[in-house]
Length: 202
Image (cartoon, rainbow, N blue to C red; front, side, top):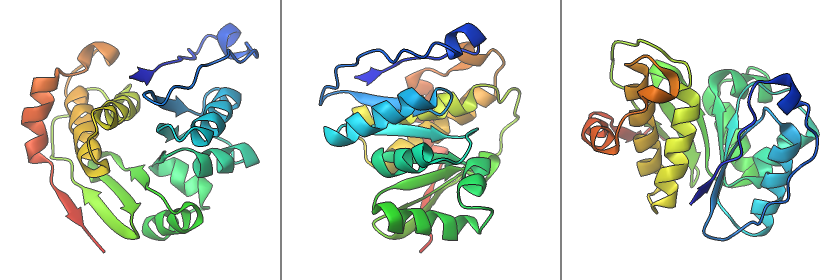
């Protein structure tokens, strides 16, 4: 299953420097963000060693050797639009994705809000659209996307199916208030995701 280690915004928790010992098991999937960079780096290195799937939420980071190693080591690096611009210094989005793909030879994606999700795998560029909806609250949408993506991967869904599931989940979440309490039920997601189309661009 998906393993969760949350670092909240409380400064005392974020200043806690001791990395807990984790037992990396083949059946687990990890989802990390860059808030606590040292543990993100630790998880990226160890999941790579043991060939365990790891989804990285690449947003709100300062470029460093640890960030580039995380991108290289995790199985599924997913950038925010701003994160990708920061990592590849404002070059064209498609060019940036292909550059990272050529450096890592694996799946890499960027979430672009209402413009949907773009990703490269097997040297091809894909896009998942997001239908126009009435947006009520976007708070936690990124967390919901990455959690849903990791959940779909844990159910042996393909990368494309996992993107579609995650985008549908995050879009539905944005239609309600309440942060974590607005996360939709799975049957709602499965019904809604039929509105999201995946297209191979090149």
